[in-house]
Length: 131
Image (cartoon, rainbow, N blue to C red; front, side, top):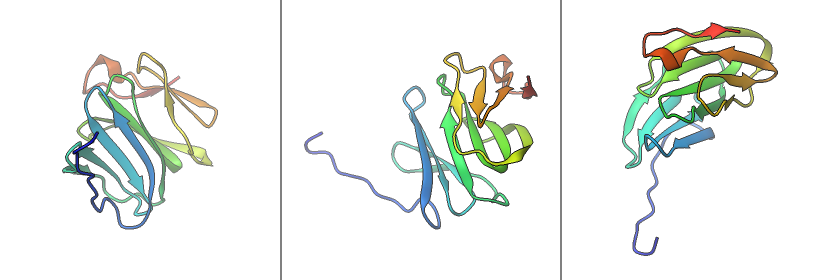
């Protein structure tokens, strides 16, 4: 919009590989070469930083409801809530997860041919379950 200032900030050590914004919660999640994901508000304030993973985070995506997001990397898939808390951590046998998509009701994810039923819709303390 005219008259608005563009904002820039250093988000990761190295390149940012993935970015996802959710219009319901107005939060941004980013994934970088530094093997971390981070949660940001629209003003560029960092709200959460993950511990570094063994490998680069290759995929990240918000659920449509804005309550949860999925994080993929080599050999793993995590399901987290909007505060960054991990609800499920699954190890996989098929390399890097390059993309994660959610069902419209935010109850399932699909990635690299595997489907996961997170069960996260039942509340913040409900764990994820494989189908």
